[in-house]
Image (cartoon, rainbow, N blue to C red; front, top):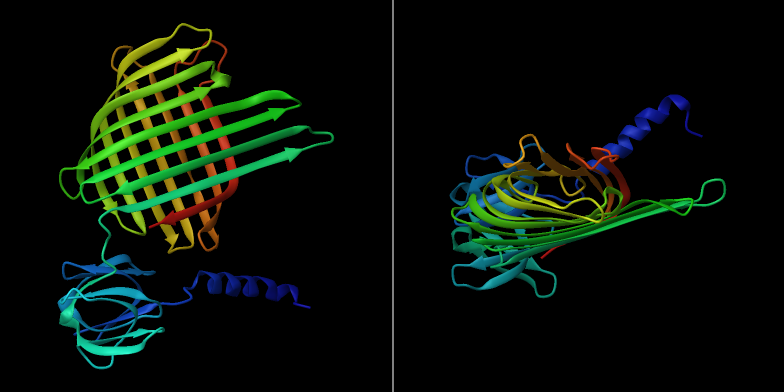
Length: 339
């Protein structure tokens, strides 16, 4: 039996062990120092290394004197030969690649390595999230939610789409039913600056909205875009249309802004995410609509995460008898995959 006074120290030890990486790579520099982390890639003579102490850092390839890794990486040599395996440092300035299938490969100078884990021409990533609850007995209720996201990215182009559905009823009375879909295309003028075209579609039975839709262009800036963090901001114009079941429809030109931020609090284990976008009417002064989603994802196993999310919508001029804000708490599982 563990004494009560030892519970807190034991708990802290477990948390620290859980947070520590199972494997790590080591980079030795020409000045004798060492860097511990995870090799992301090496392209255009720059090595990207993900660390726990400074996020993702960049190291000039010419400053690297040795390299070892605990997992397989893809190496492209100057001769265009492609090798996959774990890196070893047999001597200063050289690299040796170990492939479990064919064993130890010949030794090469670091200068003969053109790239490590080179980026594909097009990168894809997506996620599926689902959650729900059922109560019977004194309380008779059920709720469910599901969402999906997909993104395809090349050097100059990015295409993304998303869908989300939320449903709830209490004692056979509908309390929530909302469906949202989005479609967006970005064209990068530079590495960070891009123009976009976006559209949003929403149906919300509780707000009497048969279809809310927006479409329009704008300008965006990608401040950060790495495996650990992403931050962008956008501003533009949108045609805003609301088709109601019973109330009079309305439509107007609006200004649009949006901000997206993702960050791995613990690399590959705990993620924070936030996105919001707003529409401000340019025809009816003081009328605006805001929607946002934010939360945390905690790694369970593989690509499976526990998802804790809060969605918040605000319409400062709703229909008579309707609330200005809607808040949805989402607890469920999420699956993420990138390739």
